[in-house]
Length: 255
Image (cartoon, rainbow, N blue to C red; front, side):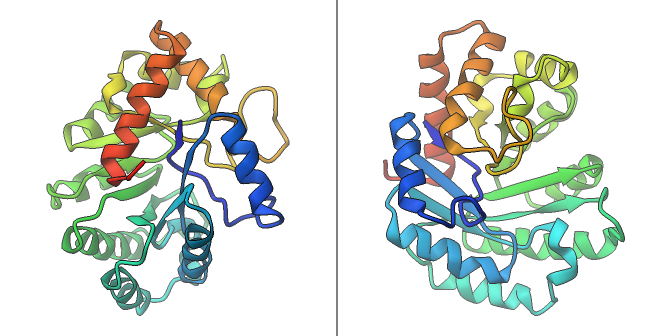
């Protein structure tokens, strides 16, 4: 299994990361994709990838951290990507979040546009975050037909999911589908093709059912895989095989 989205540079993983890697491997999770959220995290995730072959990473400017981003960070991102450091597989986490306080949609769109340009320039996939902004994000992606990647934490309708798939994107499926009450997302995922889905934990966020109030962990990815298998009416081995292939192809992983 591949955890296509895990913030391994955040607590509790910062203490004894080798132990958390061992626990993930024991659970069958053999690769983690770690997206950085701001400039100060870029070196941190690069160092993790250098230390652990199980980790690949992405660098970007996350909209929730908007207040800490500067316009000059785009040039820093360009320079970082130009070095093509080992283990770097994507641009992200980036995107639009109009639910945050003082969202400033215009600035968010401008920063994301520049990151999409860099993804196109360096022929890298993007890891996208979207909250209350699907229409604007989909419209923006129309200007970048060559840019593909993953819509992280998919929780929209089937129609929204198909709009991203139409643009060549995979949908990140996480802990939301383990909750019976998440009818809209569960029904959408049930009807969307497995060939366009990847597994993710978003650890330490997005806890799976039964572990509310605790940090989420990559080792709980099998619980998400099992929930997806149940929704799809297939065995878990098929879910693991197809989603692993999808992540491997998206990030051009050598695993």
